[in-house]
Length: 253
Length: 305
Image 1 (cartoon, one colour):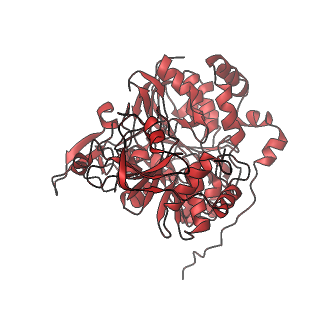
Image 2 (cartoon, rainbow over the protein chains, first blue to last red):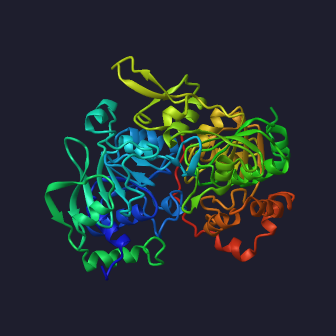
Image 3 (cartoon, each protein chain N blue to C red):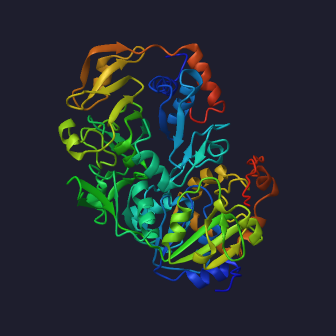
């Protein structure tokens, strides 16, 4: 992959998953790039909402945290933290939420709390923030993550944000109003989720990646979609638009 | 109550913050009252329960200084940078002292403040179910929805002993205008037993009354008012100064060791008298670089017959 980095590839693939008119809860960094790229290319009416309570942000530069003042200047609305979670998320107004974490399992459950035991952690991570609230309430969860064995695990050390629990049957019993995980985008492939079991399934392979490579970096036996696709190579137009969003390459490496 | 509540941060902290209190320094990345945290450190408060959705650098400093016995939080990271090393050292290794944690999601913690502010017995919410958090925090419980019979997650009210809320402008009795990211400012002020307002500017009451929708905190719930320009540095105040991102990155390096953290505290907290002393140490070029371009809102008309 000479002409674009694996981060650029993941951002471009993620941007394509966003539809015009959707409301998307954006985090900083890579998800922010994906949402802004989609808005520039095919989704001009994407509503960008940030956890800090800014609605319809129109940042003039790359925001450096979710509370960056550039997300306020020129936004459609700004509300309190409680209102953001109550009116927007719990109110069912958010279509897509981007989540990240240290570990993810085959049902899309995410750990962003601890590596090791909760009471005596090997590594203490920041914790949920709004992640569990987002996972429980958005229609589609999208995760962007490098495809590494330490990130894809059989069982997450701590379940911070529910994916499809230990399968879709038990997930239904939780009666969460959100739609659960929708896509996991890695540098090798895009996973979608089996409609019946809720298990992560390889839907599309990027560039010259192979199923063997995906399997090598995933500790469980990976399921493959009946109609496995080949991801469209990033177009020059997509690459240029993306690079213009992060000219100092803060997040694009 | 005296309508002039103006005093120094030193007096306000001395009057309102006691050892073993539950303290909430408000501000979701925006308007974090660093000056209040530094004054609490200087006055040597101990055994505090520190509550904040995002502990941020300010609680990292207070934990390193040995003020805290417990942390109530929902996201313990250095926003946009990585870990909070002092929090991790205390929690993982007990340096300088063991730190209890009580952990929520953002909705859970902001819901606790809302319940505290509105005197609700508890607050039901659509989150937590299926997460590993409730088994680790016995205060996150479930009740049966009396209408559907479904299991519903609930959190109890949080009523901090003291809240510090930094604002753009307030009058001398504490009516406070806030704009930009309003975070948990209003909920925290209404939930707390005692409220310290610190403000970039002190204005006439007529300025407040000219724009009453912007008053998120009214004076009758406020105990002390502090005029404290640059209180929130290295966080920011919309329209006054931007976030000092370089410092947030620098903090990660400064805190690699407990000793290097103490050196920072010696110089920047114990080594100065107050916030104006702290600001005198910051080069003018840095201060100038944080001043934003103006973006004025269109005026509104509050007229009546």
